[in-house]
Amino acid sequence: MSSLETSVSSRPVTLWRKTCIAAARLGGEVLKRYRGKVTAREKQPKDLVTEADLESQRVIEEFLRQRFPTHRILGEESIGVAEVAETNGDQVRWIIDPLDGTTNFIHGFPQYAISIALAY
Image (cartoon, helix red, strand yellow):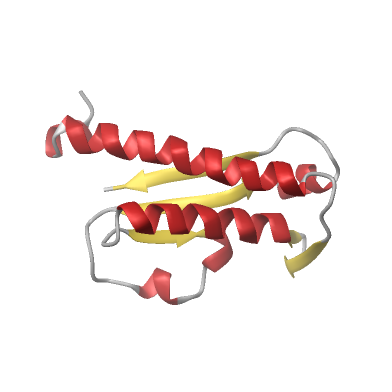
């Protein structure tokens, strides 16, 4: 049994896992709609972002906030905004990369993913 499962009951862990999978699937639907239709811009040198990244993150965050309004969220595309400095709420933080492999996505290579982690 993991330390997470010994510190909280397995019921929240199961719910969090199912929520994570559902959130990733929603983000994936967004990415499917954008596949082959994106333009990129640089956030920083050699760090690209597309409308697909931003929309995928928006959908995932909205889904998570509806289910867990007190959980904190740190999204790659929102780094530097209020969520990072937020200190109130649960001890739970969702960490999201809404399009892990943006360069591959832009060039039509199918090696990309949505990465979602939960820190407790």
